[in-house]
Length: 200
Image (cartoon, rainbow, N blue to C red):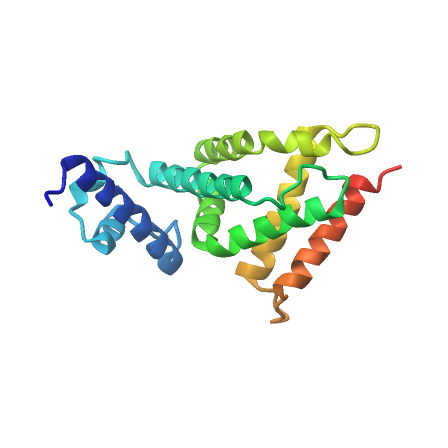
């Protein structure tokens, strides 16, 4: 069977994305050059620019792919519930985030590094994530009065989970301790449930 040009292009794009993940994991986003990515993908350097304007655009594409994959998981999981007044709903989202972060550590660290050195890119990445979080507003609508501000509360929730995940899955405290997944999920779940649903 003859491979069409469109299929070849899709294959090259997928190879570049996978290579970027691998190189980011090995060298970090800041130390990765486009030639490192193309070499790992087994593609000519010029082919990179047929798909991405630069390393920054590739990172944005990876983020969109990751979020799309996560959204698909929500659609097919019948246990998902959009009511943050229930601890089970919060636990589902914490578990999903923790699993997502562990599966995408190179990309998550790359996002953090990129935002630190390029504020404009950081704002674009943040906007992509904020757009994806819009659906969480309905999860907050079930909470007791006074109703929380979705923008503030969702950003606080994400910051807590992301910071905790980075500390324990990437940075590793100087004590050398690790935290089991279930323990991490229980801790974050209880903190968020108390903070969101435990208000008077």
